[in-house]
Image 1 (cartoon, rainbow, N blue to C red):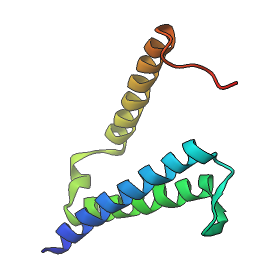
Image 2 (cartoon, one colour):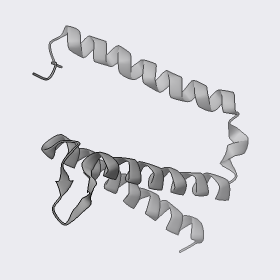
Image 3 (cartoon, one colour):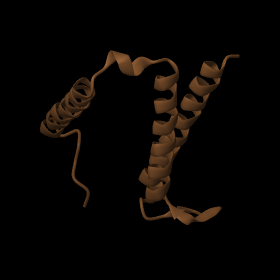
Length: 103
């Protein structure tokens, strides 16, 4: 296994940990915490897992020299496009009654 393989596997593990942190916050609430780790709320755990994932992604992209493929403007455009796509889908789901406000 190469170093890049190890980084890729760690990225997959970090994705799963972020997924679990978000799931726990939905099930139990952002302000709640894991009884085995009471010093960190679910919200704090999401932030921790997000930045751990981001760190590994940055390392992977640097290792593979992928930053050469995207300018800062291109990266910002990709992010804006994703947010706009989500908001458009969200508006459609709201219109269809698929999404509702919390009470």
